[in-house]
Image (cartoon, rainbow, N blue to C red):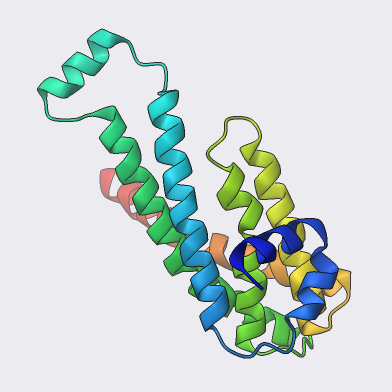
Length: 191
């Protein structure tokens, strides 16, 4: 199955697609798929920014250019950083989701969780660069992730959603606790 066929299948028939890839036990295909998807995201973002840059006046662009910053280059760099960051975090996300899937009696291996993560990112990576419809891509990606976890781990819809919620809460706690601690220490030091 080509990468284009995989994208079409995951977008149009997700349950059948996730069932068809259950036997695959290597990370190579989903990793390659996500790398190509990241490259497409970068190209789309750069192209869209070039064709329709944000509303910045010519005077602001000239002022930014004088200090060595070109908005187009900044967008390309931002897109590149986002693509790399998203790819790198896909392994961490899969690990965290896998932990909770297994705690909730999911039957899949880490590679199954990674497949759910990688393939579910298709609509988000393809649509997130477009104003207004990017949010629809993100929502459909969440649906695909839940569907993929359910199929690849042999989980009910409820347990797949709970897996996602527990992983999200864990990330929120890991991020917010240090921030609140820092703010508390800062406030304590100022008083």
